[in-house]
Every structure is written in C-alpha cells, then in structure tokens.
Image (cartoon, rainbow, N blue to C red):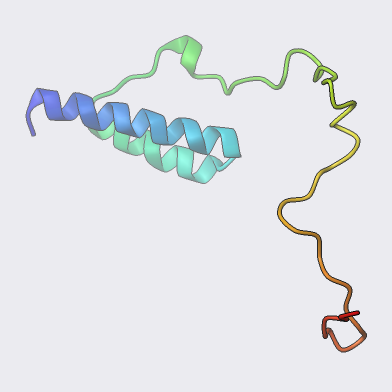
Length: 89
C-alpha cells in the first residue's frame, strides 16, 4: 500500500473505532486498535482515555420533558385476542 492509502485506512479505522466506543463494544475497539497498530498509528496520551459521560443534564424542550415520556416509533399496535389475532371492529 502507498502512504496515501495507509492514511485513508487509518482514517477509516478511526471512524469505525469511534462508533464502537459510543456503543460500548470494547472487544471490537480492541480489534480495531490492533489494526491501527499494524498501520503504524500511535494514539496520543490524551486519546487513551475513554470519553466521559454527559457533562450537563438534558434540557427541557418545548414539547415538555421528553426524558420522562417515551415516544414509540411507527403506528401503535393493534388490539389482539388471547391467540394473537387482530381484533377488528
């Protein structure tokens, strides 16, 4: 690989690693770190620590306190009988 291709691979691996860190997939982070070492990438001392949690509490929105009430996705479930069949009126 050329040096330009190595830089592109390192950049892609860093983006992949960031996603795994956000999702808490430590095993995959370690695997990506191995690949980064293979390409000669050395992390700085300030990058060694995992990112901390949220520094400020969530703000209240115009809709009200969204943290307490969870909105579903899509259409609401239709009522069903004991056998799982949809009840149509």
